Length: 416
Ligand code: LLP
Image (cartoon, rainbow, N blue to C red; front, side, top):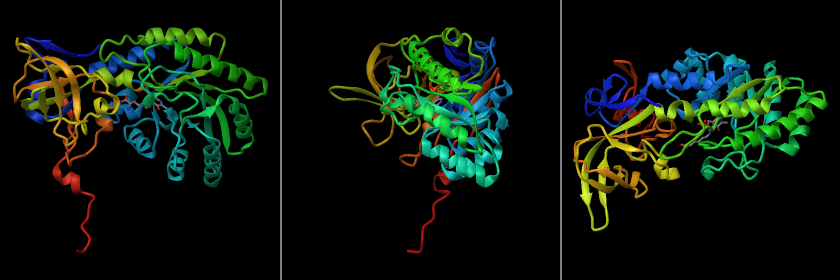
């Protein structure tokens, strides 16, 4: 469900014609819908209303302050993976008591910042990290609340780059090492064991891997309980997929049902770290056609957004639906939609059937709200796009388009 629909032959974001935003802000531009974001949060969070839980939005999916503040205003917390994300979350007004911190490579400086903020918990990914956090907590006279991120070794059946809960992945602590690590953590004076955590991957389209992971965590929790170690939080990570093409991922209510069935008898607060499912379909990337070009084997549509703006097609071969902002009744063509970047891997779509488009027209790349802007770069010295949040019949620029001055702001030419 999203609020990007045609009305009288033109694409709208909620009540605002996309062309009006483009006229004002230019292209390429990311446009998000507040109503969609709100709806997604409320549906996900509401699906777990029967039990104590905290929905910690995964900041990496889309880190704009306005989005963080919106989820914060709806009662959400956040899942962070860096000091930068902690900074953003705090700037957006997220309470430290609603921040969980994941990631395999937390630096001393990042650990210190999170300890000083007194965040809800660290999701710890290795024995060495546990030791580092313990030492820093001792040095700062603090106590770190922690969960161990357990690697349950289940196959999430997703793209290998975004599968994280298999033994061969770098994430988490192996189930059969977890008990020993928990016992060790319990002996550390500045560490308070409060939780258990896992995150098995992203863009999952089936509930079974989540259920399998939860089953393994349950067994572990029962073994810990028998040893006198009880945890208050069970963090199941993120990963619920969205429809990009013809996938049929479980609805959050279906996901919740599957989880809640397995929870039977367990009394702890559930934490979730959804990213994509909250923001993915709530955003589009609007780009203008610069040129078209036909070779003996291809029709190319050359647009002003490239892999630096949206890397998912190039990096994962990801599918994003592309549709004209103003659709015309024209013959269909099979085209490659490509960007201006000097790499053949710079494409938004390959072998895609679209009604013929002309230079100057606008295309909307759909489902671009997650891992779109947040993975963008300045490659080829391209200023990054503006971001706009539509809200009913108004809209706000929530990030200005970068300028050329922004590109060189931190650079300096030494004496030559
Ligand atoms: N929690 C942890 C610890 C994570 O590593 C992630 C995502 C999430 C939560 C949120 O997962 P989600 O609900 O969004 O699936 N760039 C890739 C996705 C990478 C996901 C990384 N971790 C893409 O564009 O598909």
